[in-house]
Amino acid sequence: MNKILIVGGAGYVGGYLTDLLQENGYDVTVFDNLLYETRFLKKVKFIRGDVRNKDLLEKIASNYDCIVWLAAIVGDGACEVNKKETKEVNEDSLKWLVDSNLAKKIIFTSTCSVYGACNELISESSAANPLSVYAKTKLAAEKYLISNHSNCLVFRLGTLHGLGDLFSRIRLDLVANVLTYKATVGEKLTVFGGEQWRPLLHVRDVATAILHSFKNNTTGLYNLSENNYKIHEIADEIQSIIGKVEVEKTSKSFEDLRNYRVSNNKILTTGWSPTYTLSCGIKDMKNLIEENRITDISNPVYSNEAYLLTKSGEIYEDRFN
Image (tube, rainbow, N blue to C red; front, side, top):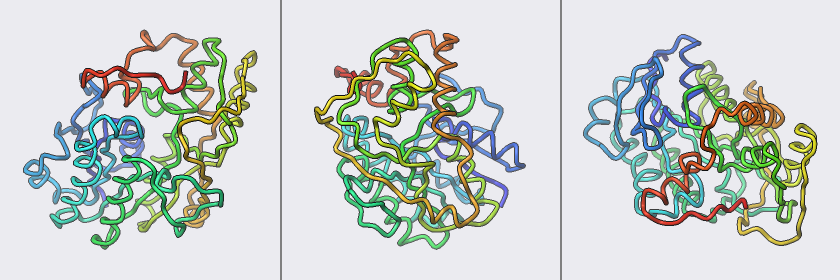
C-alpha cells in the first residue's frame, strides 16, 4: 500500500497526517475544498474538490490504494447550522463512495460522541446513544461503511486537542485548547459541573494510529483516545502547567449533556499506544499564545461553529464564556 488519498487533508487532523505519511515514504494526495482556508501551500499533491462532487471523485478514487476519509462538518454546534448540508457531507458522501466500489480500502474517522451519555466504561461493543446531528450522521456513516465494505477501518476519536502541523488552522473550539487559551491570557476558567467524563486525544495521535494501521493492515472498529478525564481535571492540569490561574467550579449544569469514558484496550492490543499527552497539548497551546503567533484570536475561523454561522449571516454566542 503506497498511494494514499487524504480526503479533508488540509484540515486539523489531515495536516500532521500528511506530513507523517510522507515522512514514512507514502505517496500522498490531499483532496480538500478549503472551507476554512484561503490557500494551501504544503508541498504535497493537491486536488481541490468537494466530497459532494461525485463526478470528480469518480475519476480519481480508483487510483489510490487507500482513501482516508477525514472530510466532515465537525462538532455539535457546527452541524446544527445547516443540517441538510451536514447530512450530505458527513453521511451521504461516504455512502456514495462505498456504493461506487471504487475504493480499495477506506479509513474513516468517526467520533466517540456516538456514545452520548453513559456512566459505564464504554467499549466498541457498547450501545451507541447519539445525542446530536453530528453524532447521528457519523454513526450512520460508519455503520454503512462497516456493513458494505470488506476492507475498512473506523476510528471513533476522542475529543481532540493540541497542535498538528505548521500549516493547518488552529482550533479554539475544543475544550482543552480553549481553556488553555483563556488561562494563558489570564482569564478565569469557569468549569460547569466538572464531573463529566471525556476521552481526550492529541490531534497528532490520530496520525500515529493511522500510520500504525497501514504498517499492520489493521481493519475493524476502534475507539481511539489517550485517556479519560473529568472536565475539572483538564482545568486542574492547565492550572498546574500555567501557574496562576483562577478556576471557578460551579454546580450549574452545562448544556452539553455528553458524559462518557471509553476503553481503548482494543487498539492497544494491536501494538499502538499514544505518543502525546494532555500536558503536551497544553504546553504547545500555551507557547503559541504567549509568542503571539495568532494575530486575531477572535477571528471566527478558529471555531467551526462560529465560522459557519458567520458565513450564514447568523450571530455566534461563545458557549465557553
